[in-house]
Image 1 (cartoon, helix red, strand yellow):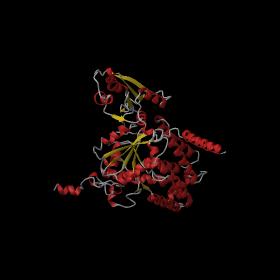
Image 2: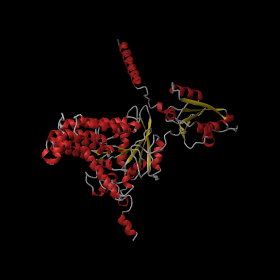
Image 3: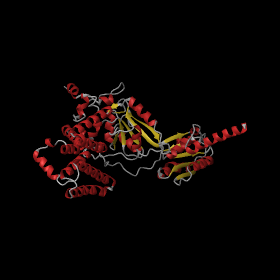
Image 4: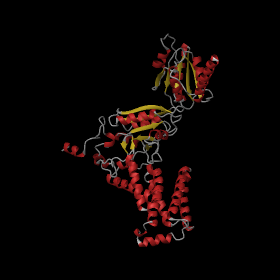
Length: 530
């Protein structure tokens, strides 16, 4: 009996270990991370072929070092490495090495005299070598050496730097981010030529091993925010990070947020300006959208071109965007509230026109508005998902045909078509809040149908309370409105000239280690110049 119990315990523990291994096939211990590179070229080839079995794009190129007859293999994935540079700068110099003198180390010879590559890194473990191959580099192994070389020979990206479709610029830069991580960091460094611009790299995704970097300016960005961002990034445990949107969902404040809590941009000049204010950028390999944190709601009505022209015109455009935002939120609800509860506030002639337009409509004002908003959202989504060549035509023609047909058939009145169209168009003026605006319009419509103006005012107060309670990486979401700071209002609803913005936003640059001023104020410079 005793022997049977011992045997059963061993078998159970063995089964549990097998289940753990099968449930996580990529589970590697700490010992696997420090396995040294075998000295035998044959052993290395067997390990690599076993690791990358059934990978038809995996290539092993075996060469011999000139007259020394030392075997060398170069491993890489097809399509990642520039074959022309690999042949001219690596393979050809190795094969044509003509000296026959005795040397102390082939590894040192390759490093100092043969390999002509600016991106060369020594690897000491087998895991680092495999990760280097998976990252798109060429890894060179030498016979009788326990080290390897990671050579950066990545092929150039197919898509060039071009103007992004989501952020059209008339006066500013026309450059946009691409899917290449190195290209994106270069576009930022081209604008901020300063050694305090720090770029720290991470790898996310247990199966994808996606390269991401965070960019910030040391001395401007708050160290507390940088540490908090690193902490949230290190907590990400998932199989795949395919785009920057995955990271956004993991690092944003709160599991559910109606408003955007992380900024998005495809323009290098816009990201550079945010870095200079004290924000941090997150760049993911394979994504053309760069994330910025912290994100404030006032950024939704800001545009990069506001700083490239006359400040009076820029201020008027910002006020126009804010008014358009209010129209997109409140106009359908205001129409329903007036029709259902507050007819006496409508001018008499306008009330007669609206009553005549609604004559014969089988639905109430609430359902009529709800149907039209739903139809508008369908047309908007269809225009986005269809091919660009026909998407705009379908959305425009569909809106005209459906609107005219609905009025002619007596399903909807002409005023509600105008209200829905104007509300939808105004939502496009503030792109970051399009998704939030769609939900708020419906909620505001329901509250207006229930309690009229009182319902709209109640919901507005709840939204304001909700926004006041939100923070993005510890920064109040409604700053500089709440908490109120007059010095930061120079870049809110109005824009002052660039020479007057001598101070950075206090909410982003306060702290012991942050530099708060951009330069000297206009009055100080005028005194110095006499």
